[in-house]
Image (cartoon, rainbow, N blue to C red; front, side, top):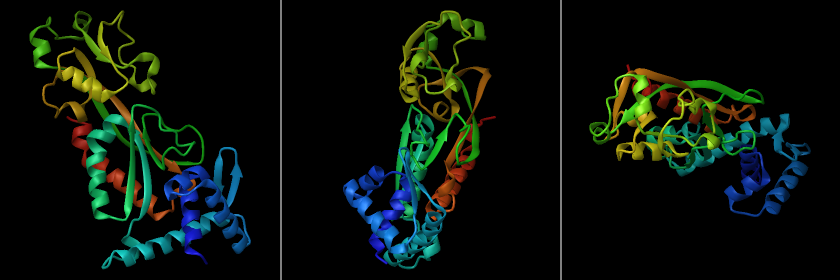
Length: 294
């Protein structure tokens, strides 16, 4: 059996789309399609169900995925002497995640993961937007909203808390801020309401005519603006507590939100996916103190 055909097969299984597989492999879409036709003809069975939304694995395709990944790991072990094939991680994993968590927590830890597994490539999509798992924009998605339907494996990754923050410079030049009612006398920093990607990020709706100094779709932009003295903002503790130039105000008022992690059901038994999934859970546990400060 031609290993190159199996390599092409694995990329389609991982992305669910010919175009995405072609992009990852650095070839044109017609080449990928031709390779799959040849493989299905050789095996005498369909490996994918093709539709307008992508390509879903058949039962035969799922079985072949396990076998092909074992071959991939064995080949990777040859390139990584001294490592057992079962411990080798190779290929590409695309992780879609909210901007703050991806930037402040995951980027550094995933860099260490790729150092430990040099044949693995992680594509970290850390954006202030919804990364759509149904359109295969990522292999693993960490989001504020739990998928309500679809063939996905879903787990609660972790809760995290947010609070009010401001800079010392801003506070020294502003009215007292001791109770929530005092916020009406203060300039605020927050999200652009009509561009919010999650209802879980609506914090100031209860206020009558809040006085915004700056709004941004980016939580990192809000953080930097707050540190520069723009006003009071609501920020995740895991990015604000250790950021120079800001400090918590109204410490008795906290907001709790949840990160949900999901991946397509058909990918759950892929070694590369399973190990990355477990790694992300371990990262969340390791950062519990900063995500949920006492």
